[in-house]
Amino acid sequence: MKFILSIDQGTTGTTACLIDAESFLFIGKVNKEYPQIYPKPSWVEHNLNDIWSTVEFTVREVLRTYNIQGSQIAAIGITNQRETTCAFNRAGTPLANAIVWQDRRTSEFCQELKAKKNLSEKIQILTGLPIEPYFSASKMNWLLKNNSAVKDAAQKNDLLFGTIDTFLLYKLSGHTNHKTDASNASRTMLMNLKTTSWDQELLDLFEVKKEFLPSIEDSFHQFGVTKNLAFLPDNIPVTGILGDQQSALFGQAGFYQGEMKCTYGTGAFVLLNTGDKLIYSKAGLLTTVEYRHKGKVCYALEGSSYIAGAAVQWLRDNLKIISKSSDVEALALEVKNLDELKNILFFPFFSGIGSPYWNAEAKASIVGLTRDSNRAHIAYACLEGIALSINDLLMAMRKDTGLAISTLKVDGGAVENNLLMQLQASISETKIIKPKIIETTAFGAALAAAIGAGLAEFDLLKNIWQKDREFNSEEHLVNYAKDKKILWTKTLTSFYMNP
Image 1 (cartoon, helix red, strand yellow):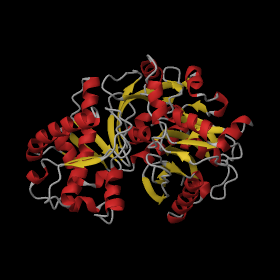
Image 2: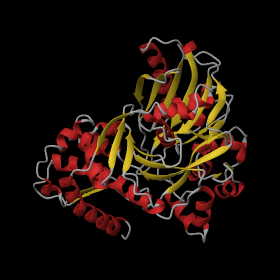
Image 3: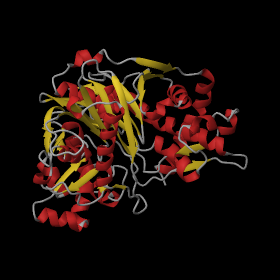
Image 4: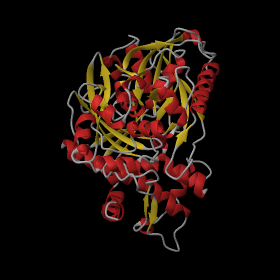
């Protein structure tokens, strides 16, 4: 038997998955978390050696657990946290900690750029993105100006930049292939959306030399082969690379125009496949690349909420009101009277606000507490805050596209929380559809690798997707949510957008 190995390198951990290369059945997975590094308030970093060690560990363990030999791997797919920025040398040695997509250290620099006449509009046309510290370009600029090892490597022409996929491919290929795919490149703010090439005007603006950057490739083809690894044999082809949110849409069989999904992970991200149509948002969304195949680009509209599951982790790790993330549902269900919650709002803006408001300086808050407020109220409000944030993305999507959006496919670890899914259905008045495989990010990378290796075509893979469960809006929650949504919008806009 042959298998596809999918490496899903996420914000809090790495997951290695095995998928049957003929039936495309999901065989199993192994996950390994790694430390988050917070050097200063609003700074978030990852140690690239920590990330690489989790890749090695999870690949070894998934092969051992399911008694599969490395020689049985037909192809490898990679998916990754996207805007997180890596700097390493040609020997594959990290020159600095990766600056994570959540990091806000370049906020002041981005504000300076926004102040320049017509620059925001120009950059949105070129890249589909607002000027935000979220994206990779300002992070690269910061490293070049503030990190001595990066500066030195740049002077010696020994500097390689990339997103996480680029770093992993470089390591997997024995320091041979410095490449990325168009979906990841579209998140750097250095790629021209129309040409899917590095844009010289943007490179000059952020003072990043083109030779430091990986080549931009189709999302499905042979990027390179494994070489000199202790945990995999040589010559296994890497044939699919997608950014994590694009990969999740792909894993939901969202290959064609009109397909849509929301992934609930560390953050929450809504993507709508717009096909070959390059739609510029007027409602605060992003225009991005879903994938590039045989030179043809498939675009998407995206809404980005920086914090979703991370808010529940904060309840667990900081407030310590739950011992594990899955406990939040049972705690929230202790609330029997929703009237007790009508004035409580949990704004999960620990890393600023993404779509559709774009306020990088925003901080999280809980408002409306009284003396009788308790742990259960906070847990319920947290889940409600996640759902309300995502509802803002859906409202913006409706405004930009004119679509009713009556159904939404969902995936990610948090979709196991039935209360959250029910709240989302009722707040957004949308049917929520959960697939049988909720590891759609990793599954999407495997499907991408299958196409890149010539093991399957789109129409065959389309039939693999299966529904597990759906959630419909409940009248009592819809009625409750109407007033809550008004309060949410009023408080958010007055407190966060008009300080």
